[in-house]
Amino acid sequence: MSDTGRAGLPRAFFLPTPTGQRFCLFHPAQGPRLQGSVLYLHPFAEELNTTRRVVARQARALAQAGFAVLQIDLLGCGDSEGEFADATWEAWLEDAHRAYDWLAEHAPGPVWLWGMRSGALLATALAARLPRPAHLLLWQPVINGQQMLQQFLRLHAAGQWLTDGNKDLGKDTTPAQALASGASVDIAGYTLSPALAQGLSAARMLAPVPAMPAHLIWIDTTTQPEPTLNPAASTHLDTWRKAGWSVNDQAINSPAFWQTIGTDEAPALLAATLQALKGCGDPTA
View 1 (cartoon, rainbow, N blue to C red):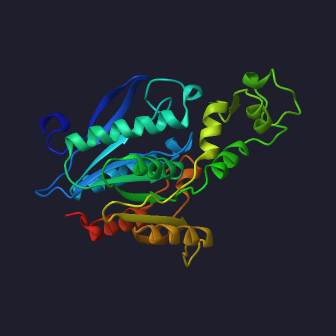
View 2 (view 1 turned 180 degrees about the vertical axis):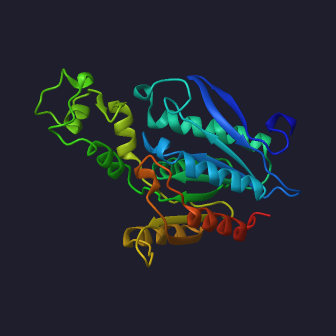
């Protein structure tokens, strides 16, 4: 696998798609035995940037443990071509599928889809489309895309959100109303199109019935001294168990590093993730 990195060093490259180049970072697996491969799907808007530090540390740790890891910046995000205003939910799913195809070609073995926040919605949607089973690793997953959209729209209160990019909209028009009328809106430095808003709001985390045994690792974080999974997550995970998934769910004490740009560390999250993955093995073997 000389084209995927040498001496364990990550390799940056651009993955071609019909709508432009997508920036990718590939971490080749280290050690004598390949444990599997991991495709990382990042969260929404600014959360991509706030999570980069912790995600990079986890990707390196996974590579050192024998997992090949591929990170991709989706259309209009990070260092990929295109504008955020051009993105749609379907286009992001197509990007994710192309990244999966590349990873499957360059790193044999069981595949894990690793989703963070709204990236978990993409991961589960992609899992339902794939020709063979993939396992899921979900960090602080969003179950309902509508809730994610509402959180994003609340970044600016109705009376504070107007910018030069929104100057043609009435002062009493809320971002949600503007999107419903077919107008794009600028929020927190991102131009959100009606198409992306509609795709995100319609996204739901559904449990596909796996053709073969498959693992779901679900990790929530909290700053509470005694971490527990929230009731909504517990109820939702029952549907995955009923669908035939082997579920490993846990809540750990860790900062909400996706909420702020800083130097937050999440060693407990990284350690729990490695332990959970190593404990799964390959149920399809």
